[in-house]
Length: 217
Ligand SMILES: Nc1ncnc2c1ncn2[C@@H]1O[C@H](COP(=O)(O)OP(=O)(O)OP(=O)(O)O)[C@@H](O)[C@H]1O
Image (cartoon, rainbow, N blue to C red; front, side, top):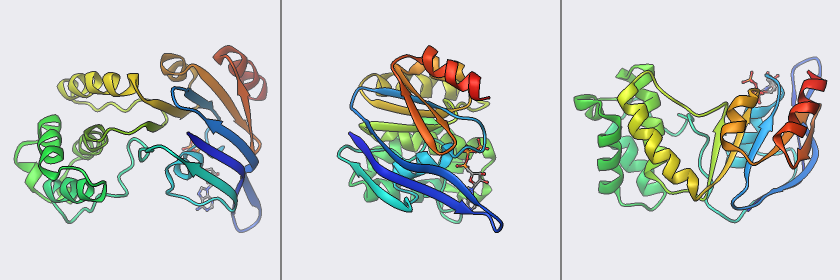
């Protein structure tokens, strides 16, 4: 379960305050696949980062009583000057996981050959994306956070391997997806919310959420 209690967040832009959330209270229960629809620039990434604990609210409380992933695609934890091997072993240790297992899994899934033992700074964007996704799939989280749709890379074989693992993981996990794209949410979500003007409006069906989203667009 993930709970937001009276959470407020805003940024000072130099001339005005950009409100992301204003006293938002909601709970994401286990088994719920929540899709949050919001226009670009509304604060999707900020909300996902707060869920992950990467960003703090200005006010209010965020409670997690299950393991929550880092946002899919998040590369912040990886160190460019260290190799793929060093990075995945370090993160495995942080999460108290078997380093050999995590390394073997990521090495197999990424399939980037000798680059796995080279500094991440030498990787192409696609390689970095593959490593980041492999690392996330190497861990079994109760809740997965996804910013802007399912990631896929330009590597078809990787997408196929990762896709099969993702489907299996997501079957038993809780998902939170933030997106401006209804189509992505309709594939994975069974409940929806619309983020608009610092507020989150919750709906039982995606169709109801879409109606409000279209109205406010
Ligand atoms: N550290 C910051 N300081 C000031 N403004 C910020 C900061 N971080 C984000 N913002 C602003 O807050 C708003 C929400 O940002 P955020 O990245 O969360 O939105 P988003 O919905 O994910 O955007 P996009 O869809 O374009 O990726 C944007 O207007 C952004 O410019």
